[in-house]
Image 1: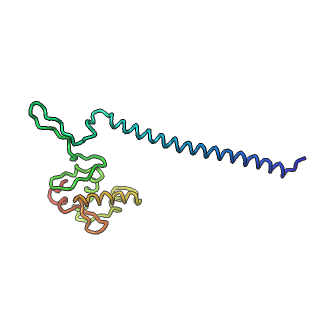
Image 2: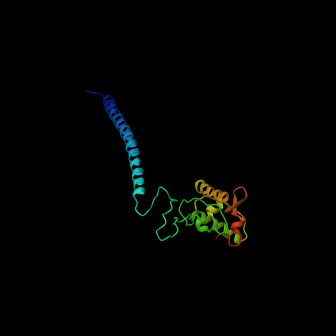
Image 3: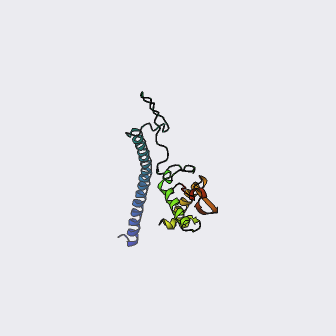
Length: 181
């Protein structure tokens, strides 16, 4: 008659072999999953590119500055609308007199509005952390740094001034009478 300990060892060995086999199979499946996911992502990207190219009504996407040919009636050529309208993730234009805030995307306009309100109330410059709190954002480094990046871009383009490191206010020319708002 076999011993109890011998039976337990035999069952433990069987369970260990089964577990090792399942782990090998799981590793193989995981490797296949990584390859399949990479292939799927490539197809998603290809599909989105094809959709961009084939989307109707977009005009000639390859040359956004293309000028339409003048008509036979002697009308001047028609240029596409410039970057005056707010677009998501648009380039921040250099500030110039008469350029409206609507030339900026909504995020940049929100920063300018907060600083304009602060300027109107006679309060000093804002830090990016104070701006994040003002906008109701979580005060986590990623959100604050995103605001800092936008504020630095606005500063480089002449919309904001940075009188002290990390503290932003409207540039004098923007805050002046009719300063683009």
